[in-house]
Image (cartoon, rainbow, N blue to C red; front, side):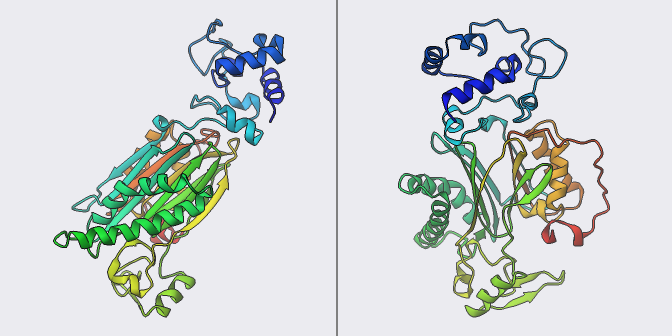
Length: 379
């Protein structure tokens, strides 16, 4: 999108958009605009202009909420500026995703310890990092990933443009580093510890890349519907089962009818679990890349199986869509999982996108009578 196009969009949108503070410009950009379009100051807000109201919901004191819906782009219940360079590069307005707006929650549930870990950070000027790790057999593997996964990714993005390759290499390198770490400290418990890992990178506010091992999940809410970005790595999957058997492993079922690798592990991919590496349990993630459509995409949710086991993806999507902000949404999901009977640690990250709030409805209701067959592990 050219400079002229962006200015035309701002003109067509009327004063409500520019007064909302979303169309913000650097001084140099304002200068360039003024040279090319002398009358632009009549259309674009500058800090010295008089503002009619200090509320983003009624910027012109008209009594009508001001949202990006009037611009035909995204809802503005979370007030964020656009990212100008990516917007020009991709040819459409792209809102900034602020880490301060991201919601996170983690409950211990009925377990003795909370072995879930999560992270939210900005690793470069244009890349945001979100991750959940669900440890098992002790917290050592999850702790290690929490501490070092971001570092491996940061080192790799400096030399590799493809974020799917970056995440794949990072997962494998973290796994190798973990086994060296545990061998270096032989008295440290955890040689059989492992963890799931679901990591999302958001570049330029529009390129979303997800990588995952285990049964933690990533889900995108698009037009109010849950779009799964990951597939659980369980022995129920034919391709995963065949790899385990070819490697010399075997599948057994516990008293609840859940399959396990060698009678011990409920997943076929993980970081750690080194006693099962020769049995086909690998740390190589499956990856997925999507381009966000901020007019339709409301949020990204990363969840551990304490949530997924008891709530399916659309239920999670519906509950979040009833909430006023991502922080409230994260807390409500973790609380809801506990109320529904989840005994595991329950962790969730909610990252808001441009369409946050569009899918909100008062019609959704939930029953506390749960059916495991319809719950998240099978949905």
